[in-house]
Structures are given as C-alpha cells and as structure tokens.
Length: 146
Image (cartoon, rainbow, N blue to C red; front, side, top):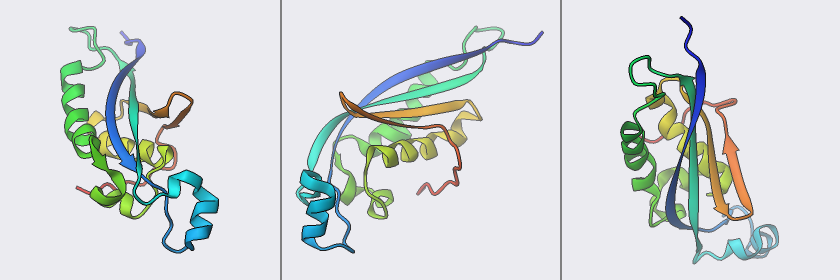
C-alpha cells in the first residue's frame, strides 16, 4: 500500500540584529546600496521561520515526523545559534555573506536538510510583516560550519 504524501509546516521565532556592509565598498557606496541597513551598529528584527516537510505519514502514528523531534532539531541547529545574536559579528557563516533574509533561508536549510532525511521541502524566513524569503534546496552545496 502506497502511503499518501503530506506537508507539515512548523513555525518558529527568533530575534537578531544585523547590518548590510560590504568592506570592499566605500562608506558612501555602502550607504547608497544598502540605505539605513548599512548602519554598522546594526538594527534588529523579530524573525519568523517556517520549516515545511513533505513525505509519507508513518503507518502506525499517522505523522510525518514527531514534532518534538523537529522542535529539538530546530532549537539546537537554528534557534540557539541565531536568537539574540548580532548575525554579522557572532556567526562565522555571516562573516562571509550579508545576513539577508535570503541568506538566512539558506543558513536554516543547510543546518536542517541532512538531519531531516529528504523530508525538508522549504524554509521560509519572515524578516518583517511585508518581507519574506524562501529556499527549497535548489542548487544547494552545503557549506555549513559544524
């Protein structure tokens, strides 16, 4: 009997500070390119993260995944490193790239994909009420810092 495929999306929250600044550019070019986000003292957001899984339900439990297991993975691999941090300063991963919503989606994907055994379908990061970015693993080559 072939089991039906389902999607499950779990929502999480974290708070972090960041700024956009390219050291290869002048101060004025950084301000022109990134506006207020180029303030090297940073600014913060209350981010929302959506983790969407897809796969068959377990025949005994009717669940795609035990949510306690997912919550523990996300807590350890995503929330602990990101929550109440200055992303530019405290995370090596963001010393090599700007901490945009797009790059946060990539970061979360890379931290979870291998642990979820092919079930991870999408990561969406909401930086604000009117800005979100998502990633579905397309073209991924893992660079996660252990």
